[in-house]
Amino acid sequence: MFKILLIEDDLTLFKEIKDRLSQWSYEVYGIDDFAQVMQTFTEVKPDLVIIDIQLPKFDGFHWCRLIRGHSNVPIIFLSSRDHPTDMVMSMQLGADDFVQKPFHFDVLIAKIQATLRRVYNYNSEQVHLQTWHGATVDYEKHTVSNENGSIELTKNEMFILKQLLEQKNKIISRNDLIKSLWDDERFVSDNTLTVNVNRLRKSLDEIGLGSQIQTKVGQGYIALEEGI
Image (cartoon, rainbow, N blue to C red; front, top):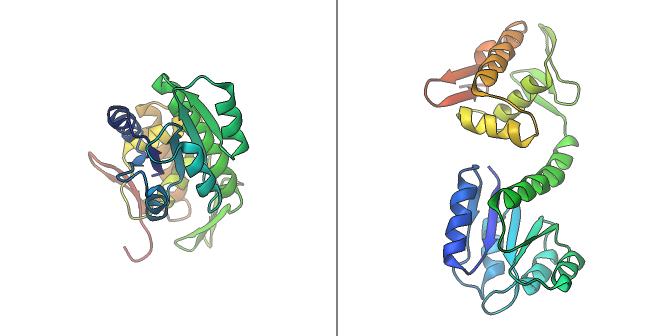
């Protein structure tokens, strides 16, 4: 679950954005004291920051400068002003994107998803091997290998396995898995997810790991770790 720090003083807009982002399984934090934005930033350690330009105390450009002095976290600016210089200034300060108010929520979520994919998928590609129950999972080659042999998974099957292994021993809901696949630009239906999970289990059975992916009725799926 990605953490988003939303620096927005319009309480109505803040609640609307938070509610909509929560539906996409983002964890959204706000600012209680606009003179202490950096303190909240340090405490939350967000994966992405959304900043309004017009804020109490100091404007969004001020906080962007301070954040960039400490972190390369992706930043998206919001602005109700139509000055072209605002967008230029935002980019010069190191922002990743700019959204003009009023905006359609689909535009904002698309920009958030694109930014997170660009920043964090790139980093995750650098580490493409993982050990699980004595097996080596190679995300790049789409293989799982252990002393019983090696299997090759489809892209969707490996994507599902990766989501489960990133939160081992935690139940991942079917809805969250479908959204993750959709965010990764893969179209899946509820039935398609069931077929892919069943195929994933069947393939893992070949090397003795099928039972380590379990269904929690009415909740979702879980990848078990050693000792559980």
